[in-house]
Image 1 (spheres, rainbow, N blue to C red):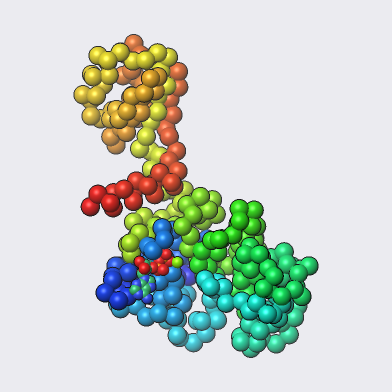
Image 2 (image 1 turned 45 degrees about the horizontal axis):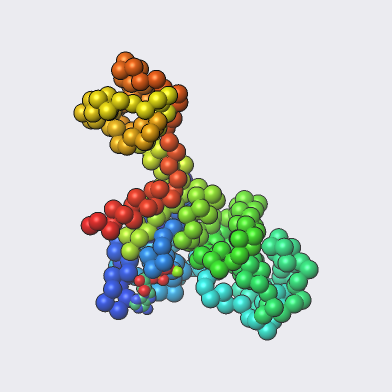
Length: 308
Ligand SMILES: Nc1ncnc2c1ncn2[C@@H]1O[C@H](COP(=O)(O)OP(=O)(O)O)[C@@H](O)[C@H]1O
Ligand SMILES: [Mg+2]
C-alpha cells in the first residue's frame, strides 16, 4: 500500500484549547478518504496543518512520504477550503487562468477548458463567479484544485451549504475525477450519509480525537455482527423471556411485541438463538443480522463520549 498522507500523534493547541489531541491516521494512494466529524471537531484545523498553513505543536506528518515544505510536495496537492478563495469579479475561466499562472503553467487553456467541462460549467465559463450558486462555486473550486494536476485532493466540506441536488452533482464530479484521473481524495464532512456513500475509508474525529478509523465496509460489518433481530409468530410468553434473559451468551437486549432483539456474545451464532427459541416452542417467522448504519455508529460513539 502506497501512503498518500500520514499523520502521527499530531497535537495542536489554539489559545488555551487542545484542539487536536493526538491525531494519527493514514490515507492510502487511491483512497476516497472521509474525515468525518461534527462542527468544531477539529477537521479544518487538521487540514490546515496538513497543507502547511498551520504548524502542529508536536507529532509528524508526511505527504507522499515527504515533508510538505520539501521539494515539489506542495505541487502534488490540490485543495479547496472555506472560504473558497474564488474571485467574484472574474469569470470561471479567469479564475482558473489566475491559478494556472500561480503554478507557472504555460498553455493551460486547454486544461482549463477540459476541467470546466468536467465540472459541468462549460456554458458559464465567461460569467462572473459572483453570479454563481454555491453549488457552482464548489464545482469551480474543485476544478481550480486540479489545475496543476495534483496527485492528492484535499477538500474541506466540499458540499457544505450546497442545496441537495447541487450536493449530488458535486459528489458525482468528485468521484468521477478521482476515478478517471486516479487521484487520492481526502475530504472532510459532517455529513455521515455522504461519507458512507462515497468514501472507502473513514476516520471519525470528535473533540480533537479519532474515535473510529478504517474501511467503511468493515466498520459496518463490525457493527452489524452485534445485532440479531428475530421476528416471532406470536408474542413470546413472559416466562420464556425471563429464562431467555438469564442466558448471557444469547444476549437478549430488547423485546417488542413480536420482535426480539439480541446482542449475542462472541461465538454465538444466529442458529444458536433460533435453536433455543424453537426448543422453547417459540415460533419464528424471520431472523436477520442487522446492518448498522454509520449513523448508528456515530451516535453510539458520540453518546459514549458524553458519558465520560
Ligand atoms: N484560532 C483559534 N483559536 C482558538 N480556538 C480555535 C481557533 N480556531 C479554531 N478553534 C477551535 O478549534 C476547534 C476545532 O475547530 P475546527 O478545526 O474549525 O473544527 P471543524 O472544522 O471540525 O468544524 C473548535 O472548537 C474551534 O472553536
Ligand atoms: Mg471546518
